[in-house]
Length: 119
Image (cartoon, rainbow, N blue to C red; front, side, top):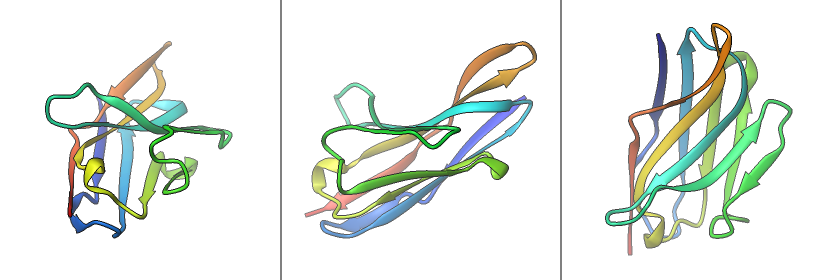
């Protein structure tokens, strides 16, 4: 069994900051990619940022220069530092982790954490 658990969401005023954390545990190893997605009401889930085990990062254009993704491979944990938050960043933020379970690479998702940015 694999668990992916997010934390750190909340309510913040526009211009403020939040830091999200996500830890993967259980029967997963060789996690090659971890990422953050978000889904606002009435919209599709979209990629925010992801990071490989080697540290290569990828960001959505809408968050470049404001958000920073990082990871601690030893702890199977990924972080998302969000600065200069805007009301349009309001969404449920989901973490995923792609790693080896048995002999297959599988992508696991967390339950999500709410981020609300007030104007």
